[in-house]
Image (cartoon, rainbow, N blue to C red; front, side, top):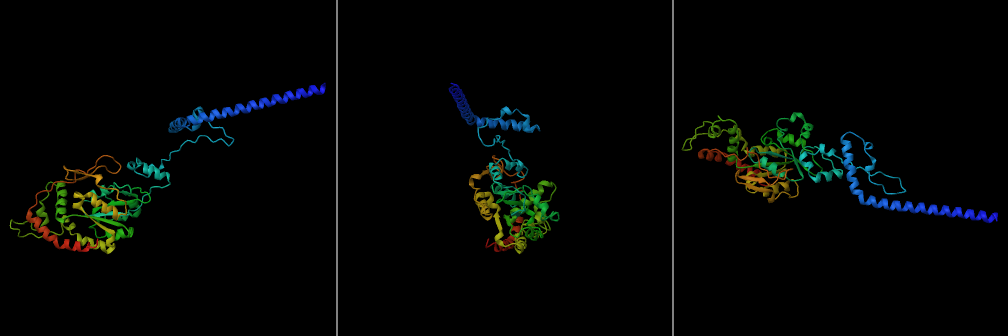
Length: 377
């Protein structure tokens, strides 16, 4: 009887322990299942709540341990080592390297995530001239291209600040991503004697853009700009000719080749110096007149010259009848229309037709020489 009693007691205990074990396993399984479902359902919402609280506390200088851990989303059951829901860390260091106007572009954020970093480098291309030829228009138009980064102001490194060194110059360049073209515009480079050799020392493969227009019209435009700053400035005819007396019959008056507005228009002389340092294949001559009447066609030539995809087309331009020249539908970093400043497109004063004719005769042989030098361009 004792043996039977002990057997029954032992069987009861084993049965009880088995039932308890089954109950615990069942409860654990059901709990994990319902918890995973809750985690899957509220994962996105919880993540947003966590990010908002994390950003709020970090902005106050507090660590994540200071906020209520009940705001964390439920963790899925796992036999592996538990890993907390990761707080997404937004790497904003790129903002210090890319200008504010470019930060709005998702392209830069994407490239940054791919490990690409914007750096300042010496320019690959220069707009070297000529003054009052349309260099500002060319710069504003080409800057719309996503693969062009250009300094907004004229640096004057090669003609005024060359002694400061290339590191100083590089610091004045915009941050550029790999594959983008870095540019700078200073029209006085074209007429400054020492600049070609200095540019060659920086980069013998630099691409050079020269905007040229009718030298007579260019000289009058140059004079108009100077006259707007000096109310008592003498008339154009008095400055362009040594004796200041043209006469109604066109007699007298020798062109003053030392006067800046006249001197700049002798393109051939300046070009010959550049051709001593650079092959013609690295120079592109842009028509200032065609930048006005057909900007898309001229910018297409520029894009090809810089080995860029033709992104800028007719759809980027509209003609402003008030100013008398084309404007951009949108500028770099801004979706709104953009025109050149009020100092552009000034009305030219009346110039004595005799003076205009005399200047055209003066420039005629120099223009012929210029066309000869650029014949294979």
